[in-house]
Length: 253
Length: 203
Ligand SMILES: Nc1ncnc2c1ncn2[C@@H]1O[C@H](COP(=O)(O)OP(=O)(O)OP(=O)(O)O)[C@@H](O)[C@H]1O
Ligand SMILES: [Mg+2]
Image 1: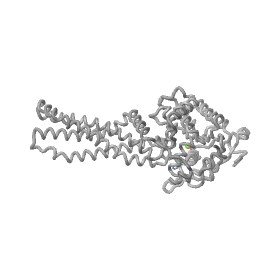
Image 2 (image 1 turned 90 degrees about the vertical axis):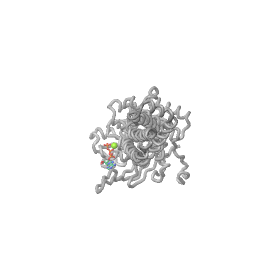
Image 3 (image 1 turned 135 degrees about the vertical axis):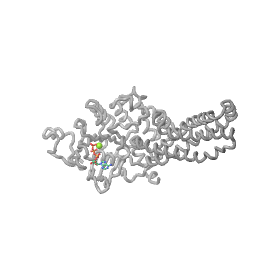
Image 4 (image 1 turned 60 degrees about the horizontal axis):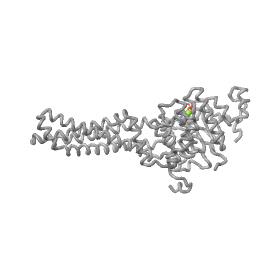
């Protein structure tokens, strides 16, 4: 079953209070992402990308505004439902890979399926399937420390896929990787998106993400600067190397 | 819970079996950390067992000394030091692993799952430290007696007490497990309450 919008974000704000000081990390962001889209969130360091991901992924509560995943308002969920949502509806990928160090690749990928109460035989088969899909069919019994950065990120991608989530949230998935490995990871995500139809939202300040995205959302200082689709991106880049000409704010929402 | 029914979402699950398996793996692969966490309890338990064995032996050879009663307050001090030491090292452990805890949360764990995993780890640490500490304690207790009394008669008496010494080791292990788990409750509970976003920031 797929809904019109896998992710709908309505005017979210997130303010951090640190004593007297306030950091307005998000200042009214609205985004709608359709099933099967591949969207990149671009913005300089400190622009609020991670904060946005945390709010959208149910890891943190926005100060104001609503987030819907598959048309469920996640602010209305209790702790059990939220755990279910994180487990079944969202696949997270981080810059730091975040694998459980003491578990093998297989066991890491199996984890969300265990939490989802999938039967053992199903898990065995599914974990093998997704690990093979990311090209690690022969590394299943290696622990994270025995894998390269790129391989660890592939394990993380396999883990994010194992429960067939509605959306994958990847916060700077290539941040810790060299150029070539980063490109491989991006290509992998893009292929998963086009072949399996998995919706992908990824954050980056890495321009090589641009080519593969259906849409690019540029944010700065907690606000959307502009939204570009794959069709007008090349033009914009040619004009001003991605600065601020030809803005198409709120483009095709 | 009622909302749960309304949306028809099942709870995520972390069975005791799986949690035990993961806890055991974590213990086996982090031997250094385990030793650091366990060292306080190993010392404490061996201290207590040493006192018991030593005073038992001394009382046997020199009944007027009444050493057992004189040393009983030391037992209490030993116990308190154990708990404080373990609580402290568990706070450190949990702080260091908060990124891992955050990761578990993104995969679908409930706070109770995190508690389960970490308390099982503590239980294993308690059991292992207890066995080790008790055995060390028995050996030191006998060793101290040998400094004062004749070898043959000491060992002859020890031979008659093997059952009691066995019980001491079991008792020391049980005590150690209980203490480590108790000492871990506060740090582990705190960790389970972390907001995932916060926990993840500490990677
Ligand atoms: N827990 C927090 N407490 C206080 N301020 C925070 C917290 N987390 C983030 N911020 C602030 O919010 C702003 C946005 O941070 P965020 O981490 O979302 O940026 P980012 O776009 O992900 O940056 P980067 O590309 O470096 O990862 C920054 O000014 C940051 O200092
Ligand atoms: Mg960030």
